[in-house]
Amino acid sequence: MPKQAESLDHLPTTMRAWQVTTPGPVDGDRAPLALVTKPVPQPGRGETLVRVLTCGVCHTDLHVTEGDLPVHHAHVTPGHEIIGEVVANGPETRRFSLGTRIGIPWLRWTCGVCRFCRSGRENLCPHSQYTGWDHDGGYAEYVTVPEGFAYQVPARFDSVTAAPLLCAGIIGYRAFERANVPAGGRLGLYGFGGSAHITAQIALDQGIEVHVFTRGKDAQAFALKLGATSANGAYDVAPVKLDAAIMFAPAGAMVPNALANLAKGGTLALAGIHLSDVPSLNYQQHLFHEKTLTSVESNTRKDGETFLTLADRLALHPATTPYAFTKADEALRFVKRGDIEGACVLKIGQD
Image (tube, rainbow, N blue to C red):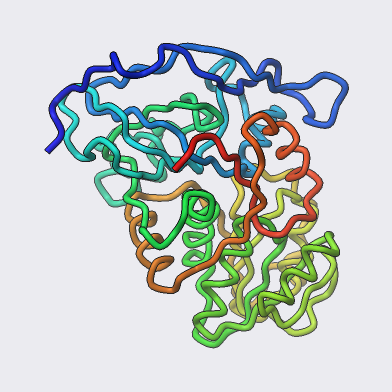
């Protein structure tokens, strides 16, 4: 069992980290991210200090960097798909031994006492905090995490492959559950990046027919290679009526078409934390026949544990494009363009 507190004398006092200077377009004239040197964070009570090995590059990082999400922490370090090695424990911290490889997700902390936390819906906690938004995240050499909000990482996944599971995978899994896909049904996926390509694997492993809608030609080809029945343009009419759909793209203009593509009784789950404005909907065309429109907000820790167990059992294989730590800004620009195979991952430390 780890000691209550670990000495930090063996660790460096400073580290490299990316931070948001002034939120703005990553492809604009003025870069919103800067690589800086800052102090290594100190683990507080109940917290673990982690040396970051890899960090996935999520679309939410783009929203934080560009200002689509309001600033919660000035000059925040983005990143919340973190795989790292435990190097120190704060006071009264016992869960992970030194050297253990763990995963750090988007959900950093919840209060545990509000009505949502007490009813198993901690993802709706009004006091919740998030890695890479409320607190510095994984675009850095070291990061802290409350021990109760970290995950054991299945041994089958190397640190690059494991990183996208910590958000893209977990959120995709929750969205899949919220979409109420019937056994043997037809599922539409709107947008086909890091989260959607993992969700597609879950669906295909269960015998569900997958239809993809995305603007990127390379992403369309990737979807077909994974086993999708069709790969269409973002606003195309579905080749068949869909029993359920999940929208990962942050484009509200796609919502009416996605609803129109649903069969009677179908569900559209909106999986993103940010969505541009949704146009007016026509009741008869978009919502009648008991169609359901729902959103997805973060995840519970139970979602994460269940998904990682499932990922291990199904041997999911996230496709990744590794980037050097010093190229985080370039990776975000690549994510913004949208035509990628799988997920981008920053390689920061050494396994």
